[in-house]
Length: 298
Image (cartoon, rainbow, N blue to C red; front, side, top):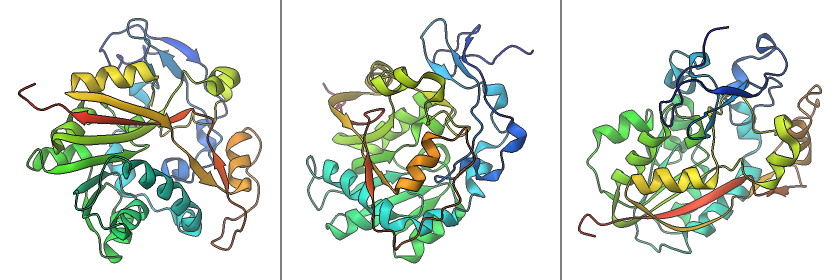
């Protein structure tokens, strides 16, 4: 087999396989990059011998990762909007512990704009960035300002230090260069402003318990962090740690079961807006991190 690509966090070579691939990639389809994916394929996960970072082989990543997300359409997500609103209401509650209107907020990775809805309803001026043409249009049709494109392209072209709060929910594990991504979030925030984002925590008890059957090992997740790594790369980007807490996702029982038992066939259940039973998923293996941008003169 060809050598695995260099570690995307530290650049070291020689990473070793940590978890083997499961199922056949050919059984996967274009739904693998959707937020609501129930793909059964689990990519091989490697572990860097130098920095201990977990990642999938960069040689296996799509040649145009941005193109995968740009063309993405997720009709199933629209059937779950009522459920998703619960998740983003909880996320908004976290942000509101640290910020008050008229603080200007930027969401990086706004998808169909549900978090934008929530923060706008609370009186915050808010703008989004979203690579999916479909997602950006969904949010724009509800009156939001959303820049279509990747964070790397859009933020690099914008003036720095514009925003009181920069948020990004479950995005950093999808990007090729996490260090660059955090630098861009930090660059967008005003000195003293907040940077708040959520991501996976491989050091949590749940992934350690289930091992390679951890449901978050899926093709669109390129990286698997622990809390120490997140704090380290954020510090390098002039971000001062403030707090961390479990990030709560809400979903339907059928979708949760599909994710937990993906080695079996997905259950033939459609998620509808009329679903009455909504459950929180909070094992602690996804966490929200709150940072403050360090002023340049400190």
